[in-house]
Image 1 (cartoon, rainbow, N blue to C red):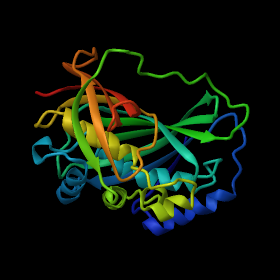
Image 2: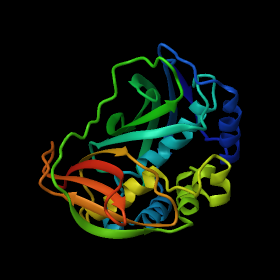
Image 3: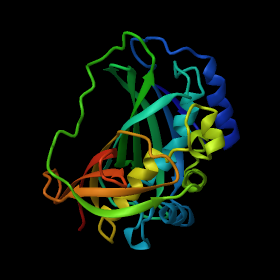
Length: 294
C-alpha cells in the first residue's frame, strides 16, 4: 500500500479548490480503489480545540474527549484523497451513508497521536457505488481509536462488491427522550471547528447552488449532538457507535431524540437511537451505541 505522509494539512481553501477541481471527473465504474494510505504522523490533542468542538455539539467538560472528536483529525486526510488522482470520482455529490466508530482506550488532551486514513472496500448499492474509507488512530504504537466512513457515489452504473445491507437490524420500540434545536448557523459553527466547510451546510444561498432548498446540518454534527445526550457525564474507556444517515436535516429545525436502553451490544451499556423530525415521524439518522466506563 502506498503511504502519503502529511505533516501539515493544506489550508481549507486549498482543500476545497481540490474538491472543486475533482468535478471534472466522471462517476464511472471501477474494480477497486487504489491502495493508498494518508498519514498525519504527529497530532497532539488540543484542549482548546476539544472544548470548542464540545460546545458546538453539546458535550460537557466532564465528557472528556468526545467519542466523535477524533474523526475531525482525519478530515484533512479525506480531503487530500478526494482532491487527488487516487479518488476516481468527484468529491461534490458524494453522500455520507453511514459511519462507525470504535474507541479502544480513553483519549486525553495532550496525547500525541498518529492519524491514518486508508482506502477500503467497494459495496454495491442500487443508486451507485459505495466505498469505505478506514480511519485509524494510534498512541505510542497502539491502536486506540478507529472508524469506517461509508460513502455513496451516486450515478455509478454496474457497481461492484457485495450488496449493501444495514448493520442496524433491531426493530425495538423507541421512546421520545428529548428535543434539541438545530439553528440556522449550526453548519457554519460546526464547519469552523471541524474544517468541513462544504457550501451545502453553510447557508441557504450556498446550498441552493448545489441543488438544496436550504442548508442542511452536517451528519456528523447530528450524530454528535445525539451522543451528547446519550453518553454518561464522564469519560468512557471503550465505546462503539454505528449510525446510518436517512434524510437531510434542513436548517433551521427542531429535532427529537428517540431511544431505548434495552438494546444488546458488546459492552456494558447499550442504546438504540434515532434522531427524528419534531413530529417524530421521519428519521434523520438511526444508530446503535455501546460503551463502558472504568
